[in-house]
Amino acid sequence: MDVALEFGLEDTTAVVTGGSRGIGRAISVGFAEAGANVVPLARDESTLETAVEAVRDRGVESRFEPVDVTDHAAVDGCVDRIADDLGVDVVVNNAGVNPDSALGRPGDVTDAGLRQVIDVNLEAAFACARAAEPALRASGGTLVNVASVGGLVGLPRQHPYVASKHGLVGLTRSLALDWAPAVRVNCLAPGYVATDLTADLRADEDLRASIEDRTPLDRFADPAEIAGPAVFLASDLASYVTGATLSVDGGWTAR
Image (tube, rainbow, N blue to C red; front, side, top):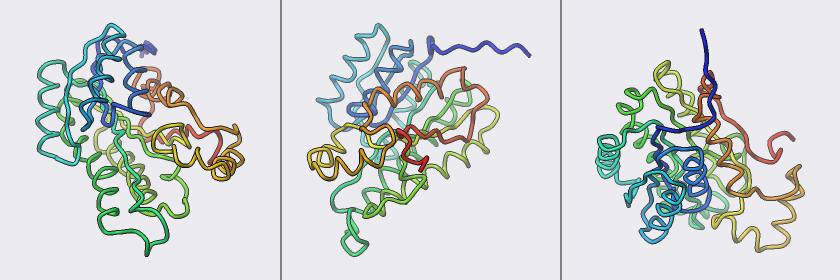
């Protein structure tokens, strides 16, 4: 068979959860620069509005769709509207949290913190995938889940987060089996990235130094460095890749 390998995403539409800031915003802009129409999803309307403007500044279409990804009925309606108007070729499950109430030794983790992490990081990803399945099957599209190195190895004092990200890696594999050959499903596992989520870590000189020392590339990633691998997994260059988890971690998991 002849295989046309294309890196661009022209004539496609991507939906990116948690798409208004950090890694999600970088992925939204990266997809737009690769030619895709992009609909970032987020709760915060002010940051979402600037993300939509950044996408449109790249000459592609976007939509303002504020939504709480833990509201599964709202997600269903949102995905249906996008599919009806623009189609859906790519879904990126990027929304994630790691609040203080979920950090520490197991006895320090509150029920509310545990529930929030699982709701956002795992259950919402499943709900978004479920909502998008008909549209992705129709387009022969692809799903990209954004996990973490915490989905591949343990991280101390981050038990709910690590559990949720391991679950997301497992969900990626099971969806890839269930949806093949119609839809490809893959996962990114970023290391430590310079976003709002890691601001406190980077502000603490000792913690920052310990993370950089543990990372062979000796630094935090820029969010844009996660966008490139996401574009690759969504593109035809990855047409024979499904069920895979790609580490984008500066060598963290190589040790």
